Image (cartoon, rainbow, N blue to C red; front, side, top):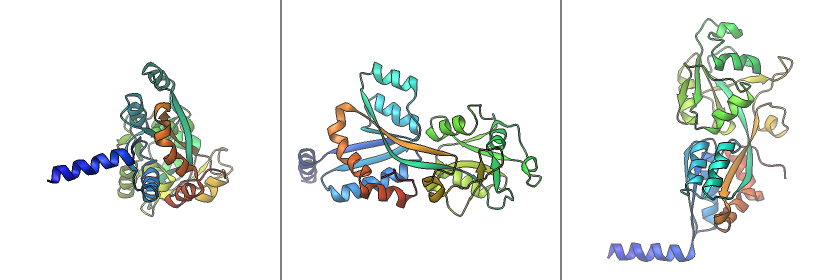
Length: 271
C-alpha cells in the first residue's frame, strides 16, 4: 500500500511540478539554498535541490548533464567551453549577485591590514612569518580552497597576480572549513566569501594602491565598489532546460530574490 501511495504522489509531482538540480560553487551554496527555499514556498509544486562541491564540479555536472544549473563563483573557462561544445551543450550565463572576497585571520592576530603585494607574498610562500608584515614572531599558516573551487581560481588571478600557491598551503574542501580552521589556529590566514564572515575570524583591510588606502570588506564597501576584491556570482545552464530553470532564475533576479541576496550576505545587483 505504501509503495502505491508513493508512486501516486511521484506521478502527480511529475505531472504538475518540476524538479530542478543546482550544483557547484560552495560560496553560492547559502544563497542558492535560501533562494530555493523561498522559491519553493511560492511554487509548491516545484522542487529544487542544491549541492556544493565547487564551481568546477558544477560546470562538470553541466557538461555531463547531471545538473540543470551550475552555480559558479568564477567565469567559465575556455577548456570548459570546449567540453560543452563537444558535448553538444549550448549554454547561457546569468549573473545572480556579487560577492566581496574577504581575507581572514585569527582574531588574536595583531595584523589588521595588508597590501595586495603582501598577500601575494604570503600565499606564494615568500613571506612565512607574521613579523615580516608588522605582526608578532609567529609562523604564517595558510589555508586555501582546493583547485576545483572558483574562489581558488579568482583569488589566484585577482589577488596573487596569477602566481602559484605555495606547496605547503593547506587546501580545504569547503569555505566553512576555512572559517573553522582559521578561527582555531593562531597564525592562520585564509579567504572566504562575505556571507561566511562571522565573529570567529577577523577580516583584514586590503590595499590595492600599494598601501595608500586600506578598505575592509562589508556590504557598504562592496555596494559602492570601494573594496577591491569584488566578483560576480554566476549561474550557467543548457538552453535545452531554459523553460525549466527560467522561473527560478526570474525569482532570483526579481526584487524579492535580490532582497534575499542581501539578507544572506551577498551583494545585490544594481537595480
